[in-house]
Amino acid sequence: MHSQSQLSLAEWDERYAELKRLGLQEPSYGGPISRHVAEGDLRLRRLKYDPSWAALNLWNFLLTEEDRLRTARQRGSKIVGTMKDLGTIPVMAYSLPNLVAFYPDGAWWIPCVMELSAGLLKVADDLGIDDSFCPVRAMLGAFVTEAHFPRPDLLVCSVGAVCDDFSAIAQRLPGLGHAVHWWEIPHRREPDKDEKAVALPGGAEAPSAQVDFVRGELEGVRTQLETLAESTLDDTALSAGIAMANRIRRSLRELRHLVFTAPSSPLPALELLVAEMLAIHFCSDRRETLRVLQDLLTEVRSRIESQEDEPDDGRIRVFWVNPVADLRAMNLFEACGGRLAGTDFLFAHALDEIPEDLAPLDALARTALADPMVGSGQQRAERICRDAQTFGAEAVLISRIPGASHCALESSLIADTVSRELDLPVVEIEVPPLCDAMLPTLQTRMEALVEVARARRKP
Ligand code: SF4
Image (cartoon, rainbow, N blue to C red):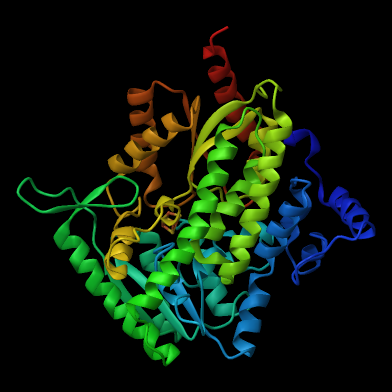
């Protein structure tokens, strides 16, 4: 069972030294995880890690993205900051050979990873974006300090059916000297009875007219990317980009399926969360993302094979809703006896395969419209129910995001729908960027969920 062998940072250092003695071959971004602490990633000292070589590479890959972006610029690539859509625009950007895309939104996690030492929330406070906004306000601080990612050559941001938090924060950027190309994503609505409907990845439907509209918006993004790259982004290049994104999404789909359904959990929740994040923008290197995921898959497959004939690990299978602002909460969850059996970290549409039998911009428009956050909360809740059933979840944990404008009402709606449709126990928690002071409360709630679910198991 993985939890017995999870390592502290100091234990990983010892293991790393041992692996080096045994001739460990590392990628260019390799090294002990602890070296990132010296760069300010203080939270790493408080986490527990999977002990595999594949997980080592996963962490190092994640924590070296800034270096990759700077190297890309030195080599003459242009950098595109894509904001809010989570998963669609990077597929377009990476279809051009001299563009690299990243999400400034990823600053969401800097207050956690750097244990507030970067001062980004204070910068946001000073600009009037206080803690009534979600942790994405750290992005504003990162734009001001320019200490966490290179200044993008182009910023592309979706507007329309996006949360108030992001919208208010992104609208500050032009005033700070950052030109933004805005594109509109409409609120996804149910097609009228007499209206032509099209299927979206993930099972929802949208009116054909909305897909046409989004395709037009993406045409505008294509023009921006072409201008920046000084090269044409034709349908052949876009189709190749979609095919590569789908290879990554298929690897992740298999990884998730194995992790959620194996008798004993073959990968900790924390590493699974990090692996899912790679699919959004490929951590600034598509090929390496695929390699990192495939190594994780190999590790997980081999663990499952060696589990044969072993009984179920007895952990309670929990469907997890929303990302946590403090990664430490994922370790705590497993210490309380839980394991993941499905996730919705707000970007399900970045994990579903993009249709390859359609014109590429049509396919990407459908993907963008499949975003769980641009449709109704009820539709999101229904997909959560479907996925929780598919993975045999015994309970659902909703992790509310502090300050997030959508969480207060949506969390209750999801909880009510899960209770009504699946009759599963549900608990809501709220995880701030540093949850240390709340660990006892969080632990009590997680343990209560696990105990209630365990009591419902048939003898
Ligand atoms: S976490 Fe929620 S409130 Fe914050 S930016 Fe994302 S969707 Fe918006």
